[in-house]
Structure formats: structure tokens, C-alpha cells
Length: 362
Image (cartoon, rainbow, N blue to C red; front, side, top):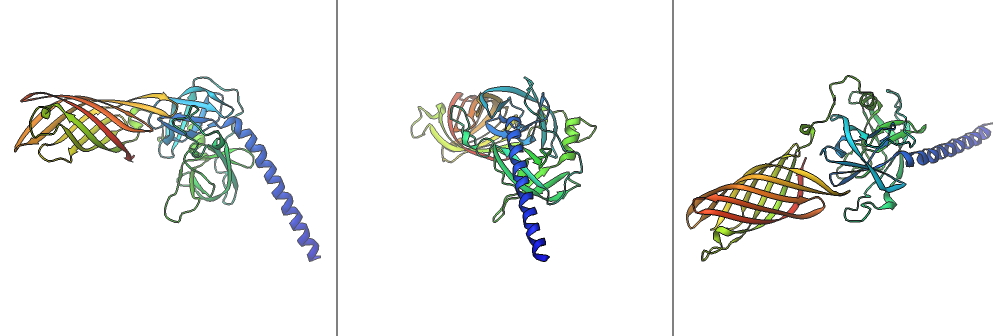
């Protein structure tokens, strides 16, 4: 009797596994039509179509408040513009409104408080698919990647849960669904560290329902420029200075380092210091960053600014101030800047080429 019970349990387990695999196959086919690719700010993310007009994604995917393009997996060449309609910064959620509504299948949102530890979940996204200088901007072999896992822990207080699914940059904003294909989360972030395995932290259905329904909640806001993140950057510079061009024993080409802080991704505060000695300089300034998309994965930033430079040469200290114009590109390491300054000895023209070492923080 025990043997028959044991054999029956094996058969039932096999049947359950087979049914689960079939369910995931069906869900993957549905998600392929409902999970777009999002381009914004020189980056790539995922999303999910939750109605004809709206796409749900992660706030950090669109927090630069730059133009957004939404493209579909089976029609990469033809995208549509989108704008940020509502956000929940604390849960890293954003709702985008499509300029052109879509007739594609939508992803239904699960009811609140429907998560259980051990529950099977899956996601579809585009991990590491960005190719900034390719014609299509994406590696098509890495779009629409389907991954499965389980709900490892539910944090009711924070309205989020932990999962062991495989997620990477490019998965952000993608849907996390249950076996019935209902959306229970949005890929937000991954716990990183030495020896850390697959630990993803996902906002759950409670916050998603509040955002989509636009219920009264202090965490749900309409996006403003002040909602964008603050970023810092470090750039190695080499600059030609007209002030020293015709003076003997003074080199007009000086090297230095440029540190900048972009408050709300717009208001720039910067400090620059030279590596050279006699002459050497230090400078500071502030300006405003304007961002223009050149392609899906390349953004040009134009930064007009006011600057003050202090020169140290031959034991003297001289101040110059004036205006500059800098041009930067996402995915391209060089930065160009032209400055025109006035001081006690006349005008100074400076042309600067910088090697962008990347963002230091957010």
C-alpha cells in the first residue's frame, strides 16, 4: 500500500510540474506582446502594458525626465513617445502614458495582499540588451528573456517582496507575474555584495494598485523636475589657455580634474583644479543642464554655466570670470567645453577636452 501511495505521489508531482511548465509557456507567449522596451536618457529598461494608454515601469528608468520612447519586441523600428503620468518614488514605480494607444494584450494586475511565500513567479525583460552604437540600439538575442523563481519573503510594511529570480540591468521595470499571468510586482533592484546570489527586491501589488488607480496617497505624485535624482561626476581635463599662449616659460596647455554635482539632474555645481604648478588654476561655477536625445541610446547634454577661475603664476593670483558652454554625450567618454572670461589683463579664452570617468553616485 505504501509503495502504491509513493508511486502515485510521484505521478502527481510529475503532473503538477508538467502543468506548471505549460502555464509558464502560455504566460511567456502573452508577455512577449505586452512587455515593451523603454529608451530614455541613454539607457534601456522594460515595462508592461496595463491598459491601452498606460505602461507600468520602474521610476529609476525614467527619473531623468527625458524624452521616452516605447518600442515593442516584434516591431523594434517603430516606437512611440511616452510621458510620465504618475510616480511613487519610495516604491520605485512609474506610470507612463503612451502618445499612441496600443491594441496589444494587457497585463492584469493582481489583487492586493495576494502574495504568499513560496509562490511561483516569473518575469520577462531585456537584460544587458543595450548596444548604444548599433543601428537598432539593442541585441535582439537578449530581448524578451523569461526567468522564473519564487516569492522568498513578503515585507507587508514596505509593500515589497524578495525573490530569487535572475535579473540584470535591462530587466528593470519589467513585470513580475504569478502562474495565472497576473502582475504582482515590477522589477526594481537587486541586492549586491560579495558572495550574494540572486536576491531581487520587488514592489508588490499593493503599491501598484494604488499608483494605477491614482488613489489618494501622499507617496503618489505628479512628476516635476525636482523629482529627478541628483548625480555626481568626475572628469579628467586638458585645456588650452589663451592667457599664457604668448608668455615665455608658461605653458598654455594645462591638465586638471573636474568634479560636478547635478542637482535634480539639471542644476549643475562644479569645481575644477589643475595638476600643474606655476601656472596652475582652480575654478568653480554653476549652470543648467539641457538634455537632447540624439538616438535611442545616446543623449547629448548642453550645459551653459557661469564660472570663476583663479590663476596662480609667478607668485601672483589673478581672478577671471565669465561664461562657458559644455557638450557631453551618454555612452561617449569625451566632453568638450569652451569658456570666455574677463579679468584685469583682458579676456581669456579656454578650450577644454575632458575624459569622462562616469557617474560617482545618484
